[in-house]
Length: 103
Image 1: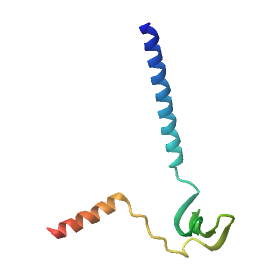
Image 2: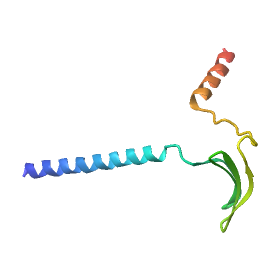
Image 3: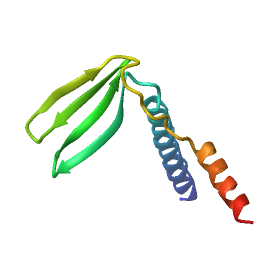
Image 4: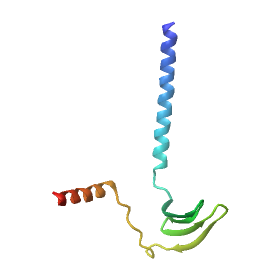
C-alpha cells in the first residue's frame, strides 16, 4: 500500500519538475533578442492609440484602431533620437546620489 503512495508522489514530482523546466525554457526563448520591439505606446481611447515600433534599424509610427493598423511615419536609422532605457543599476545610483545629498 505504501509502495503505491510512493510511486504516486514520485510521479507527481516528476510531472511538476517537467512543467517547471518547460516554463524555464519557454521564458528563456521569449526573452531573446527579437527583430521587433515596442519603443512607446500612447493610448487615445479604448483600443485606439499610436505606437512606435522598432524593426531592425527603422522606427515605425503606427496608428492603431480596433479595425486597422496604419503606418503613419517611418524613420531610418539616425533620423530619430530614441531615449535610452534606464536600467535598474543606473536608477539605483541616481537614488543613492539623491539620498547622499539629503544627509
